[in-house]
Amino acid sequence: MTRTFYLSLIALFIAGIVFILNSLYFDIPRKVLEEKYTSHTSKFLRLSGGGRLHFTDEGDKDQHTILLLHGFTGSHLNFKKMSPLLSNDLRVITIDLPGFGLTGAIPSKDYSINSALNVINELAENLEIDKFSIGGNSMGGRVSWRYASAYPEKVYKLILIASGGAERPSETQKSEPPLAWKLMKSNMTRNFLTLFTPKFFADQGLEKSLYDQALATRSLAEEFHDLVLMEGSRDAILFDMTKDQGEPQHKLDLLRKIKAPTLIIHGEEDNIISVESHLQFSENIADVQVKIYPKIGHLPMYEAPNRTAEDIKNFLSEKI
Image 1: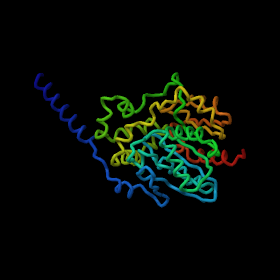
Image 2: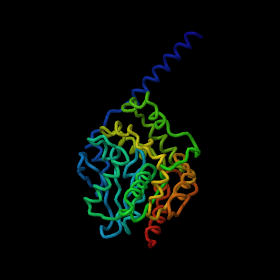
Image 3: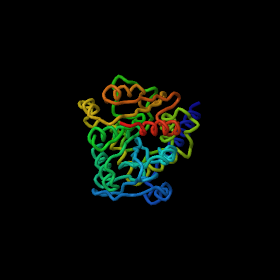
Image 4: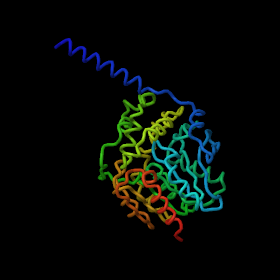
């Protein structure tokens, strides 16, 4: 009995060591990931503060421009199903925000929302776009509405897809957040994540984000996992743009400054941000349309790209 017990402990210990070793990942060189994930629509902008901003630019440059922003740990690839559906009628620009995607870490190490707003302005100025529509998913939605609030004269219309930044404290998620997000909130484990980044973090994150589990494929998880491993990105991601940045006291005032007509799209089965969060937007932004998609999770543009694209095109075609 005692021998069996000790052998079991040894086996468990060895299994634990193997698991940890298999979960340790070193940074992937930027060049390797650029070769793997850039496309014919990819472009890079050398930022004034250092670093290179990766973005995609597709569609007719003479058409109205929509700028799309991804969510936390995401990238321009989050819109790869939807962008082609929009580009026949619009100029579609997707950005990898600093700290994420093929932009990755930047020398200033400033990954705040205010820094993201400055990057959007720099890109728009470089592309000579004076006024455009802006939209985003999750964290990207939060950056989008903050931009619309800060620069109402530059935003034609605003699209919020399962947007963050307006949740009420009383709103509860349908399920527990992904394990990686929990670990990030602990000072004891945050730094450990700069090397300990097992692939199951990406698997679990997708399972939580998608209602249709058939879409949570191994290749999609690999895409998320690869880009998190870009040299310097894990340190940047640990900054965590999703955390409080002084908004709670002024959140409603910021929302009320938004002048642009706003389209809210949210999946009814969102496990990351409660579908009820759309009420904060609809109650505090003057001109709002709300679309709630049944049997859709946190990534409507990925789970229902045709419907999402159609709703966006119809919304943008409406005259103000």
